[in-house]
Image (tube, rainbow, N blue to C red; front, side, top):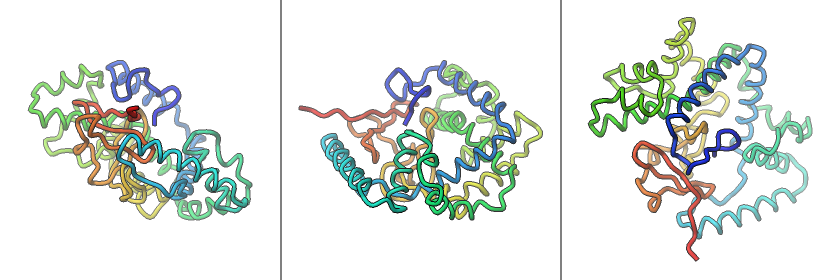
Length: 297
């Protein structure tokens, strides 16, 4: 969920043209700030997420009504407390590290004992051996731009489905960059994925980049069987099925399965999907929106 500087003041999901232009500037800045010296930090970031991703915090999963959400949250709190009261074995430290990571409390590596952290991350470290620094760099670079380009690609697709002809001016009015719009609309055959589009965008912006090489790096780092960060190894945000894709919401990736894609999003809050944390999601025209369901008293 959005937090810190990315937390919008308006109801979640109501991006303005200024928001989108600011995101473009931020993506450009982050790309310019990427240095080879920072690749080790990126590698550690991916190792950490890969190692902790499959550690469950809660056994309880889906809920469907606002009242059930509150009950579920209470049960999860009790379950977390019980797990943290357990003896300080690897399960205890793994749970604590995952909680710190999910809530953004602190870097878990600074709290977990070094020998335990080595055991928790050992498998991911072994799977990451043999990667070139360039592959880490390319994969991180693609992830930097996906929060901007995936929503653009999605909105262009939705606009086309409504029969809107002035696609370029409509997207430009939303605040999107003219060159990015031209690239998104340049193919008669739909883009296979936002990752494919992002690789082409980076190659367009910087001729030194090769789109095919970028895609290969992304598959190497995030592909199934590597670091465990593959979409197929993540769980859908809205159910317990493996995810097959993701969409981006205010800079955050939201993995989902085939049954919970953006094309199937409900069109009202009343019928919205409630995710594992109790947040309700729905589609409002070209925007994806979310909120904590209210409870009638």
